[in-house]
Image (cartoon, rainbow over all chains, first blue to last red; front, side, top):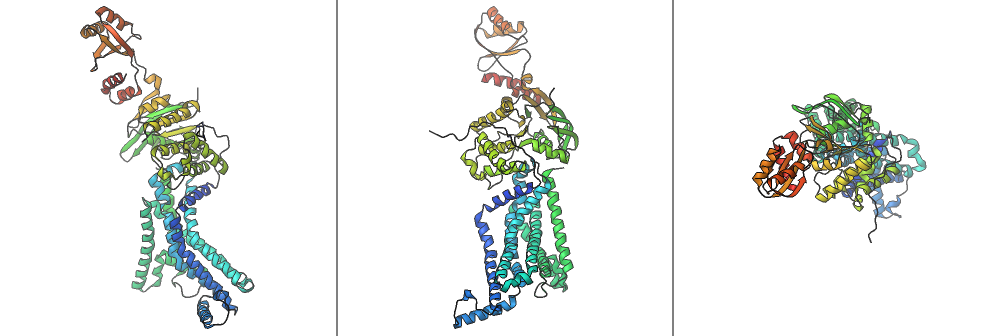
Length: 308
Length: 320
């Protein structure tokens, strides 16, 4: 005997329905769940930032342990030659990176390409594939505003970006907090935590907008993926070439990643060792990119919602 | 008189030089209505205009009492209308339950209601355990049912169905038409069924609007449109065919013999008595007399190709 699980009888809906102010959250949640279903790329793309997080957190831990004059437990007990050499090596590294702020900025510089890759991988198809498949018809046949749609897509890309741009920085801060003697990191360098969150969100927002803008212009995901990297690489290369030819470092502000790195140096108050060109130009470059990207996304989504 | 569910006045829409809608004007009463027309007649454009997915060049449209041309009206229209698009438009990597529940959330249902309502409508359209699978691997029939489910999930009073039987096998088509018929006739939904498959419209709809080149060329109830003046019958006889034909002509009727030997007779009377009289007079034995109903296809062909009417008659009679 076969069990019947449904009766195929239409049941009118008796509940209430009123579009919420935060509809974008429902759509963003769905987009994130759908994107995260592909586990292998997620693991592969998160592996480099995760490994870098472990290394940099370890360096911070070592720095504080050596600063306190105690041999770090991770290197083992006792005073043999191996432990001595190891602590000497860590000591040298720690001198360079004792400042957690330096470590976090270094981390960002080391992993920004991976963050970009993660955002591009999961964000490139967000609008391009909706348009190609016609899924926007399903969304915009509902009381969903253009703003909700854009926010949902932005949140989706930013979510994946924050996994490699905000979370690792916070992990390093947590390690620093617990490794520092008497919570000295929390008491004396609390601004680093704010800068970590602030810069993580800032870089994620900028790159998310760039990714979405390219996605809204491309006809399919692959083209958008290529477009994002072409934009980032070409702008960086152009800035570098012009800076070299003209012997003017300010041209480096043309590169979006370089401008973000300059803003990072400013936000974390790093005096040297990082890109040294005009902060104003870097902020203008990032601002123009942000505004232009948002304008492109907005006008392209407008065409998805209502074709004039 | 019932308020019209769709009211259109002088609607115009062009894509470059191509005029998709050319001063379209009509009103639709609540109930199941078919929107017929050949490819490029402007059916899909009209549906998108009604949803506010396209902006008209001129004219006004109101659906369910709201104007989709304004921002506020568009939101109200989209809250009270369920739309089943023609293309696949499903999101790869999403299961049917997730997709329908998400779209229910976007229609304003709470999370719990969205989930339970998604299961209810998926039950209704007959997507069983496969609802938990990614829709990437769905057959065309399953995709069509899923699209119908998402259109129904917020229980809208008006449904816009764009080619719901596209690409379905006969079994899937029958199931889909059963669902559409049930929604239109038993569940009290006002539906606009956009199709170029005339039997689909004939089966599911009460009224029909025929479009051609962006204009309404015919509108009314299917019963009225398929009503013929006088009577048309298929007659099988045994005896002298020439005498029978002459007898028909003498009484003002027109008879033609078809390839299969049967006679197609048209009379202005409303019954078959004159045909029986001719047979009696001319000594012809009648083997069978069957009335032929005009189908929507005849009306459609007569509208678009007047010359094809005769062909359509002979085809429908042959099938009879």
